[in-house]
Image 1: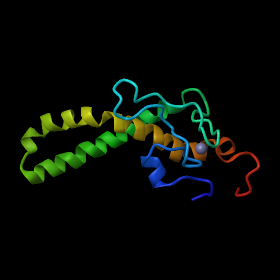
Image 2: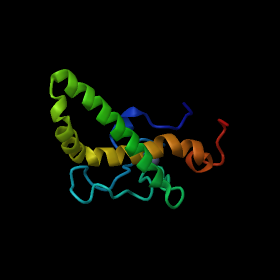
Image 3: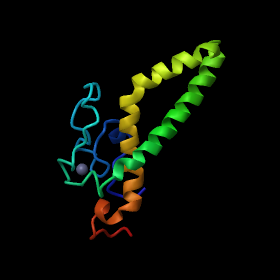
Image 4: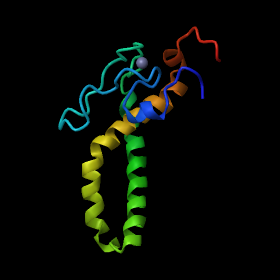
Length: 131
Ligand SMILES: [Zn+2]
């Protein structure tokens, strides 16, 4: 992993992918309707959270992957517990309740995984010495 990057704890805390201090999202995850609002830049290191317009469009694919994995996992788990017939009702209800987390993890994965690779100059700065 390149230097100047935050870790797993910062990811789950919704912090900046570069310094691990500034908050990515404006509101609490449980604030209904407002959990989607994202800050424009880090309050600590001034890293722009949207390097170009539509950057977070890719978060949709991450969210999809997370939900597919979650559905497969829950199907197997419910099958082992003997509730596989009810999985058709249980899983969609669980998905609705986990939506704020899935939405945020999709965006955070864009910031933590895609951003450092696709926008190296913006993420690390042009005067970096670790190329
Ligand atoms: Zn930062």
